[in-house]
Image (tube, rainbow over all chains, first blue to last red; front, side):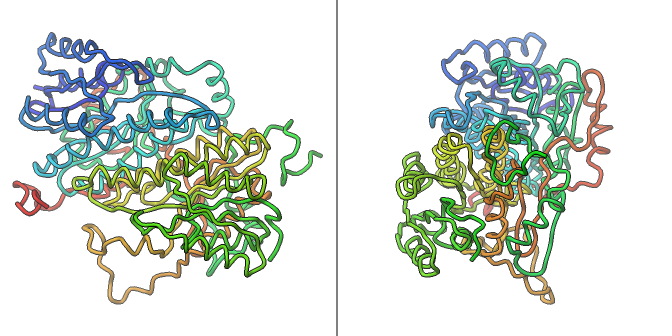
Amino acid sequence: MGRLEGRSAVVTGAGRGIGRAVALLLAEEGASVVVNDPGVSVDGTGHDDGPAAQVVEEIKAAGGNAVANTDTVATSAGGEAMVTQCVDAFGKIDILINVAGILRDRMIFNMSHEEWRAVTDVHLKGHFNTIKPASILMRQQRSGRIVNFSSISGLRGISGQTNYGAAKAAIAGLTRVVGRDLGRYGVTCNAIAPGAATRMTATVPDAARQLRAATQTQQQTAMSRSVTPTPAHVAPMTVWLCTDDAWNVNGKIFHVAGGSISLAHEEDPIHTIEKTGQWTVQELIELVPNQLMHGIINPAPPPADLDEVPGRPAPV
Amino acid sequence: MTDLLKDKIAVITGAGRGIGRGIALLMASEGAKVVVNDPGVGPDGTGHDDGPAAQVVEEVKAAGGTATANFDTVATEEGGENIIKTALDTYGRIDILVNNAGILRDRMIFNMSEQEWDEVIAVHLDGHFNTIKPASQVMRQQRYGRIINFSSESGLWGNAGQANYGAAKSGIAGITRVVARDLGRYGVTCNAIAPRAWTRLVATIPDNRPGRPEPKEDAPPRPKMDPEDIAPMTAYLASDNAWNINGQIFHVYGGIVSVLNHPLPWRTIYKPGMWTLDELSAQIPTMLEGTDNPMPPAERIEGPATAAEVTG
């Protein structure tokens, strides 16, 4: 007897990678699953019914219950269609997992509006498009689990990903608010920032990899501790958040990579300076470098060979 | 007046009122030449009025400063480009970009319309991209620049009824972290401020939202939180003194300035392999010890929703 017997779930982007692993584990635990995937390429173009259909076949072959959906999350009609399909096929929606995503990396000064729009539409609007219709039903039935997918790209910052990083950080904010909007109705909303080798990470150019490695001086991620972080590693924590045991876990962000699972820091104060009344800029010039910013590092400082950096002390 | 920002060219969006106005006035008094952008919309983004931006320009000039008005919206690609172009056409460059423009359309997630979502995201999140993109090209070429974005505790900490605003404001923290890394090596910094101040935006928030604590009768008076209190830290981040502060999020109100944690791994459990659900049931409560469910289920949760809730 699985932990999710009798529950029904929508998993977006479930045709491959992390979404597929989550769908398989949900089904193994007894949930009936809408396997959503329009079968697009990593940059969001194209369409293929194959990936979603194949995961449905895998679930059925293992004795589980699943149906395929190939709508896009990037439109409100698409989001509503997959939630409706879950209700039509299985009678209700208990679980919504928002995994679908695409990548269009570019440095900010070269990023086109189309690249910005396509990525924020799928990730951020895509989360709203499924959460809105699901939240109406979950609120009425007084139970529900929503698990969103954020990313270290937005939570720490990764060069070349203004669109993706903005959307993924926004999803963390969305998670915190939705957790507060729905918590009293027995619904939880949490987010996972996964680290896994998928076809999406395979698109990152080597030059960008090196650059990112060079700028990641401040924090070692949990990812570096684990051997080979696979999509399957992300599934247990995602599915656990959907179980009854997680009834009181809400509005939280978790980093999951390989065998590492971390609760993310709240974005609360590290250092504070305080006075009664308004600061003057002159006072801030004295206090900020030594007190407020003590021990806090510039993640991408101007290089030594950049000639003029006004304010930087001359080398001794 | 001092000369902290002497001859720097600054663009400030949403500078016709509130926090943006305070920043424009202080930067001008520190010697910056200022583009005062404001389309003069209502707190919900509707309407148009050249008056607020024009009036702040007059205030700057009356105090002996230099300023020009711009009335474009940040919510479109063309608007963002026009705002930056105004600085280039009028003053020949842009050194400082302050992204302060914003609107509110509060609604619980289950009642929020697509339009309410789209319009708030367009002004806040797209609005930041629309100005940063053209400004970043110029700043990269001139090997100098300061970008100061406006986030909010609504997204960083979570605030019921603000899925659109909270998502956008948290997304702006993400933009800030990425842009800092894209531009840092070119002598450009990008930071964000999450302000708290009594402005006309805050005045639109209903006082009867569920979960909002009742004000106590004997509660001390609210601390003074003027919009002008945000300006000194903003001006400091725009100065040469802040050349090495980059990719950070600051919480600013009254006489308080805090630098905030990024949401990176805090408490970690590790095993060399796959976790099972049983193991997680045993481990996760320990990981969460001392943290709260910000909105736990109501005491009496059984039973269907009331008719009023279903239709409301």
